[in-house]
Image 1 (cartoon, rainbow, N blue to C red):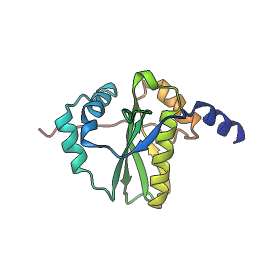
Image 2: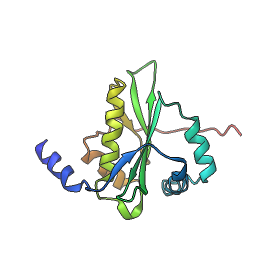
Image 3: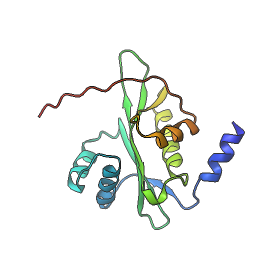
Length: 157
């Protein structure tokens, strides 16, 4: 455990802050959503942010020393009849230029604090099977592979 803490502190940048999103962040946040494989425009992203219920979801924005967004994490409550209250990381992305510098770990820490404050039993993250770098990140941060499943989708439009 001590070794993990030492590794985490080595990766943590000193000039990163985490704050709620602002309307002026929409362009960068939308661009980052595109890097995750979910292209969107700033107006659509603003609408999605507005639709989130603050009691059930949060978006944390990582910023550099100039307060420019360099990453974000979206976490929300996950209620189920078959499991205790949990939180789900619905998205976490860092700009390509700032990856592997500890910013993802900072955002994940913020998501974990948010989940604990809401008495969640666990924080759940799902990633595509092709995102091996993300898998290594979550394992390094103390997450375990709980199961493998298929996600089925039916378009309703």
